[in-house]
Image (tube, rainbow, N blue to C red; front, side, top):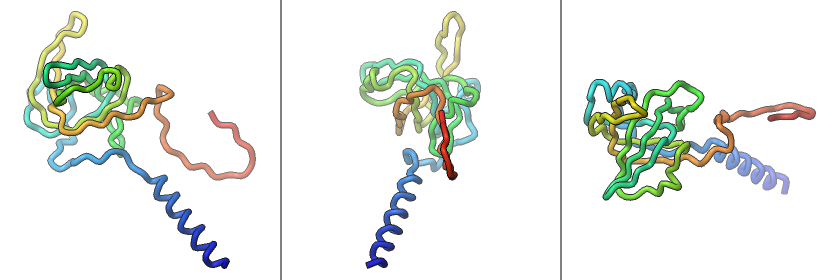
Amino acid sequence: MRRSSLKIAVLLSALLALTGCATGPEFDTEGVNRDLQPQQAASEHIEHERVLWGGTILATEPQEDTTQLEVLAYPLDRGQQPRTDRSSQGRFLVVADGYLEPADYSEGRLITVQGRLLESRTATIGEADYRYAVVRAEDLHLWPGQTTTQRREPSVNFGIGIGIMR
């Protein structure tokens, strides 16, 4: 009887440990240029490269057959989630096939996109001209909304006693 209880406890512990190791979305990173950043791609007019970029959505504009997203780029962590606690890497535009709901893809949401560079495009921000790298989306991941402005890293704590955490 004790052996079966022990086996069940070990099995449940292993299952719990595997659940805690869940990762983010899976992207096909074969052929992705990981060194290329949005500002560099735009200024050097780089096209046809596969990229994996992410950031904060600044604007969403549905068009006839596509939706255009303006994104403020940030470096990605191991799970491909944008690190908004780091310095931004410029802006880029995403062209996604079909209609993306602006209420879902709203300003401030985090997104990761994998795709191929189409072109560089100049637009105006305020009164200044800005050159954007344009990515044709092959895969998009919209991250769940955050309850705080800064993302927390996973942590494990061991101890005995009472603790107050914020």
